[in-house]
Length: 445
Image 1: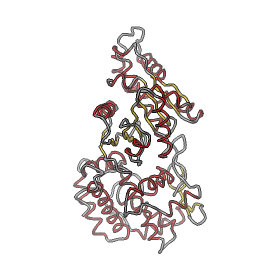
Image 2 (image 1 turned 180 degrees about the horizontal axis):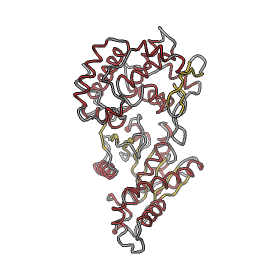
Image 3 (image 1 turned 90 degrees about the vertical axis):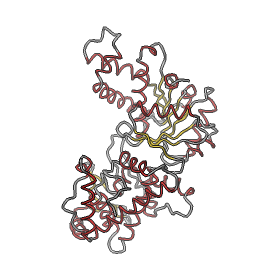
Image 4 (image 1 turned 45 degrees about the horizontal axis):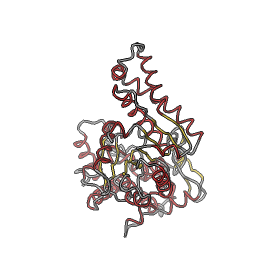
């Protein structure tokens, strides 16, 4: 079966979710572009948007229409070529409307898993729940005579386990989009020995058509992205616990978060990043990884206690941030959790004193956005980290310690065989996490 035939009948599981909606959008745009080629005009293309929530699917269709309009406006020249045989379409607005209608006509929202029983390709983006994923895979596989291919978006569960437990005979691979899929350029591709060359080649072609950067990862729980992120977060949790022997825990959380953001010039501090991903999601990933990591403790009591108390973070359906370690006002941390009472303490009440204790930033420090765009970045970072080492303040010392630990985590991913090389680890952190520099570098001595 060639590429065009494989992509004629597609289903997305968990289509109304944060990841599924982005995967559905990207797939709809790719399918529309394929469908509109002259040789495919007479073929039927179907994209099933499957989700348990009727309300979620209703909102999904509005989201997709809005995003398809934006995509169409950016590629009117290409669309004119695709619609060259339509003399009735003259104005750009008419071509854009036709493209929106054609793309939306592909999508069939449903709460019934049975609609996937005729699909040749299935994208899975349900919650990070291994049992649920395997159940859905088995249902489709046992009822679909066409032996479909399955692309799972799991960020942690070993692909080999899913393949074996669902009896998919190598027709499953890991195709891990980063959040949000429509914006993020990175895809982690996790293959297993049972995969055929055909399914792997298709995955690479699909990713290329979506203009994604593909980084291969070996099938070890957590893969590259979460293999680094989970351990990076645990180091932050433990640092805050250690600091809490000298100060209240909520102040320690603020300090670790601020240093990992401002001193290391990252887009978010480590606690804010955990809030963004979701405390419950991080907890689940750690639990998935733990049985596979002998001699390593991948567990946080702070995390467990907060999740048990209902503090989960993550985002609302409109993309706004839910409260986690921090309470957010207009997208920015305004107060921090007091674990004892599960209430929030305003940052304004204590940050001045704690910032004084942390110490000043090096004078050359830049906001993350400025550093990302810098042309002579490596030269700047060499000087910056040199200044950081010389300052010898609590903030600068902890920043260096954190950066060194981050580097060691990254190197271990290579030595453990998760990543093929150091460059791949850096690419994941640079592209998938928007870091301004890779953890493996020459300027963190």
